[in-house]
Amino acid sequence: MSEPLRRTPLYAVHVAAGARMVPFGGWEMPVQYTGILEEHRTVRRAVGLFDVSHMGEFEVTGPDALATLQTLTTNDVAAVRVGQVQYSLFCDPTGGIVDDLTVYRLADDRFMLTVNASNIDTDWAWVTGHSRPGARWRNISAETALLAVQGPRAEALLAELTDADVKSLRYYHFAEGAVAGARALVSRTGYTGEDGFELYVAARDAERLWRVLLDGGRPAGIAPIGLGARDTLRLEMRYVLYGNDIDQTTNPLEAGLGWVVKPAKGDFIGREAIEKVRAAGIRRKLVGFEMAERAVPRHGYRITKDGHRIGVVTSGSYGPSVGRSIGVGYVETTHAAVGSELAVEVRGVPHAARVVKTPFHPSNVKKS
Amino acid sequence: MANVPADLRYTREHEWAKGDGGRVRVGITAYAQEQLGDVVFVELPKTGAKVTRMQAFGVVESVKAVSDLFAPLDGTVAEVNETLRPTPELVNQDPYGKGWMIVIAPSQPAQLETLLTAKEYEELIAGGGH
Image (cartoon, rainbow over all chains, first blue to last red):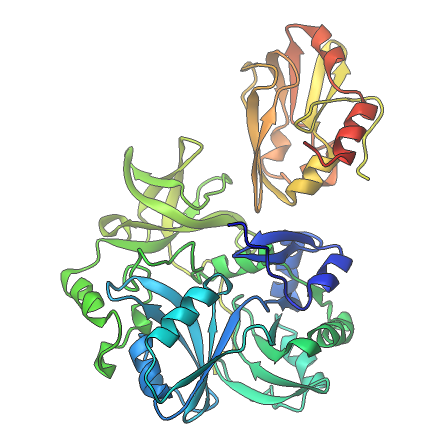
């Protein structure tokens, strides 16, 4: 991996703000500005601003756009109305997960897909390689910036700055409008478990909008939030992270993502393999667990029961709003029930853990 | 520049050591805790455990990273800072004070004089830490 790290349009702004920059999925990104715990709490209690412009965006248009997406994704795109967003997956023919993504229906025959930063190149090859003739694809990742405004005070802040009707905008819906004079797609979505919005804007507007949001949010206690807190926030919700919890060796059913697989819609890539797994039953399952002590479970640590390996940790951290060390991992289904007592091997020593209900922290997303 | 008290001695792995009536108090430096970020767990040995110079005696975990703690000298653990168990954030808040980790009864007290001086440690971290 000798390719130079990519940078978002806000790179210089982060450096000037004193952020600690780290490599993430091929990108040079802010992991923290002041501290992960403080940033985490800012999002839970007030409002935080994230630069997630590293995410990729593709647009697909034309008479075959819908049919192409039905083949490429596991969820039922026909059920998505214009103005609505859908969480979905690309799977390969074996049912392995190529990426997780959101699908925006911009018009009957026009969609935008938001994909993971580390997968932009593989996803682009995947979608264009499986496209029908009447669907035209455009990779708009480089020209698009993505800012996330997340937290209980996000709505009030954004309402002051946009002509879009954000107060009546429902969860997993979007509106197009102007935010502080910049054309934006305003989406009521996020990766934190708090109410909030994701703003898709032109890359050239990103820096000005970043400053306007920080200035306007000052009375509400806004702060820029790095990828460190983004990870602890999403983990407390048990939202999966591609590359950690899901990848091409995991299938949607064992990952708990069966709810976005809709075999009744017709054929799609991976359908047959996933249906075979469904019929046979899954052998392992992604569960959430809490540690009895503070030792932190981390990606790759072994999960054991009475000294035998029964699984592996895929994500773990101290959960700032939970007040305990938490994690998710794949375990054999016989040990996956809530209440199941397990151990996580931390530096070779088993530490007690227990399977718990998730999310670990109550979700505050806008549900109606 | 991180705070480097002149009256302490230091390791290349960012522990500080302070002679204290024949015993040696040990913690991690202000620079180390800044690099780690928020400390959420400190794993320490029990009183009476043997420690060996530049061998790991414990572990400090931040939200993002795990880091070994290295003993500055040979000896036996005489005291352990049990308050770090419920309040590991003391390592960030007061690394040279309430965030101390262990007290060693050294078997070779002269080893203390072989550790880095404050000036040498300052030069080390000015050069990037390693």
